[in-house]
Length: 390
Image 1 (cartoon, one colour):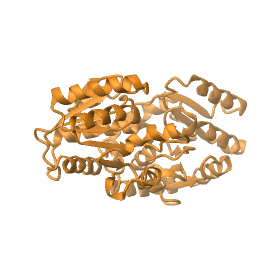
Image 2 (cartoon, rainbow, N blue to C red):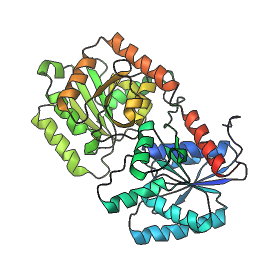
Image 3 (cartoon, rainbow, N blue to C red):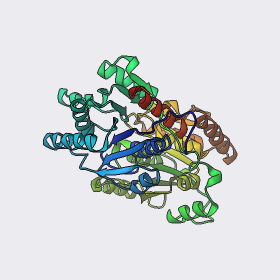
């Protein structure tokens, strides 16, 4: 896993701090950087409550230190800061990299008290309408160097926190092309995925996939409305898969189910829960959607789906605008607009399959040159080397 372009981290210990190890983009990036740190000769520690990606972290060579890192309680944050100070002393931590706000406050306090270099990654477009919320968010701009996961995020950080450009390093999130390559996904995996979705081998409907945790801003409800606005004959040719974990949002799931029933979409929309084999899920679909109503800081779904040679429909804001080239690799809809999303769905579903395939192949070529896991790992290791003065 070593790379001659990577700095030598031999004898260095890097502590990444993140609330949990669920299957989100920030969590996957944490695991990818544990792999890179280990590959560069360093020791990769991750402070987190743990989660689905624990096995992946272990395989990457990382070591999990379990802590209730997600709590926003000020007393817990201070208690965690003391715990991190102890870890820094006992494990010989040379650099702390924080990836989320609550644990970042603990990590920042510990870094200040121990004189440990401190980096942050701005993974999200954190809302801050009140002074208290803006202060809470500000910890993500306290890194000696701040990693932004898109040009949009970098501009957001500079505008909101008045941070000079010199302290910001833009490193787009990377795609693991070893996993997200159509040739590396067997026909059996794809068939099993479609079967799990209730799609038989003779079902020739166009499969639309919207992956992402079930929360309102990811656009599941909006997409159901957009499908309902299609003609009945158009809807009969489609099957929408909503793949994602509700993470306790049972009321939202009930809202989606009620909307499906009210619009007579019972045979057209399926809620399938968490899907671990995402490469197979993308390959089992014809079109992928990411119509988030709030700006995505990056847009992992758009990048991964493009890597799997699938055309993508995204909301026309945030970091996703840097991934999808309008009319070439997919299409972009006005954020939150039912008519705009309906029009985008109609545009791509009305194309011949050969035209959709060509669009997906163009997307694959586009992301391969811009959004690789290796590029992310190399650039982030260079940030570490700069802070460690290697």
